Amino acid sequence: MMTDLCFLPAVELARMLRKKEISARELLSAHLSQIERINPNVNAIVTLTAERAFKEADRADAVIMGGETLGILHGLPIAHKDLQPTRGIRTTFGSPIYKDFIPDSDSLVVERIKSASAISVGKTNVPEFGAGSQTFNPVFGATRNPYDLNKTCGGSSGGAAAALACGFIPIADGSDMGGSLRNPANFCNVVGLRPSPGRVPSYPAEMGWFTLAVDGPMARTVSDVALLLSALAGPSTLSPISLSDPGSRFSLPLERDFKSTRIAWINLGLPYEREVREAVNSARPVFETLGCIIEESEPDFSDADEIFKAWRAWSFEASLETEYREQKDQLKDTVIWNIEQGKSLTGPYLARVEIKRTRLFHRLREFMERYEFLVLPVSQVLPFDVEKPYPTKINDEQMYTYIDCMKSCYFISAVGNPAISIPGGFSSSGLPVGVQIVGRHQDDWGVLQLAYAFEQAAQHWKRRPASAY
Image (cartoon, rainbow, N blue to C red; front, side, top):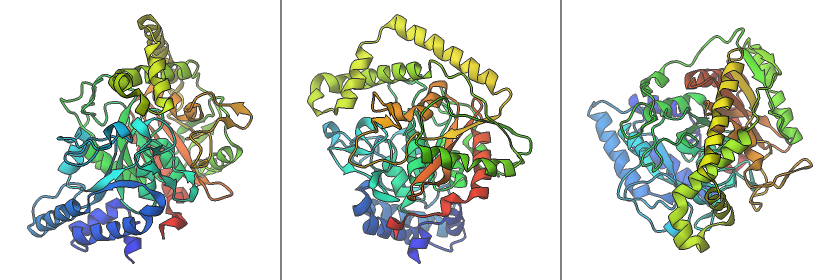
């Protein structure tokens, strides 16, 4: 069935294309048919470029038939997050301010994906300016969770996660400041990797030295995430923090022996909904069968909340000051709040925050001399009502801001270690729950290896949403 084709791993589809078992046009047709049938119910793809995609697919088939060298993503359909500028294709940032904006150049992420010969089918939905763990905006509306259309898909890479879960695309790009690659992957039973800052160079970026926000890959399996990362990663003169490791290192086999690997099973002292904690704890025996040594031990993450919120507010004010000054009435309240928080910051205060961040880095570095990985929940809540902007309580604990429910993600963002969300189980009502694996400083490869080993043992990724049929 063509629907089954849409749920094959990207690495398998890439093999089939190279072996000429399927053409790029046939593969694209299958995915576009899936989008046409299911997307009206989910609203994951918000700008569709089918005509352009078919032209690209025909070119891809001509290259294959001509025996030319193929890109590592050759012929694979992909959609770009609507925060990524795409030349000649509307890029709205989820804001009415930019609802008709058409960039004249591609971002570096899009450029690298094109260079690897993937075929773009359009753009995926985001919350306004990527702000929040719920994907809705006044331009396109809300994206719904494929496992329960009354629930949110998460955010801010929510359209990408939902599109993957529904079989619209086999790979997707995303971005993450406070959990935007991990949270929606967790809510939609797919995989989202927050790479180390600089692993995937970002451009254009007005704040080139900023490390809180990163671009990265999403897919349904860890191998597919590694495949996309191999195209996205690698040094670039356009980014002052880009890492020198070549992207090709992520195309190596992911198998590894984890016998006696020490893992810290942590909760960071945060509140979690009961079924989130239960699902993640049910993953513990899987890690133990891999030979891992699990210990319940907590790193000292004091000051992480202050650090993240300060630098997040600073970045919002710096990047959206013009929009705030000239078109404030078209910004949503939470974005205005973040900008105004940034305006209240002082230089001496931010200097003290940066000192605290450095101390946090060293506390975690020392803690992880004993533990190679940390494991914890991705989100503190299950997917919530799609009509609800954000959770205001977890159990009986009040959430004071629209990002407070994401501390289990953004505490990790504050220190910059690589982290991944992988399918970890389901609630009693069938909602996905992700497991978050955090690695040592810049050990993206180790994170992928452990995630792959867990995925192969647990197999939760194979459970598709009923809405995708």
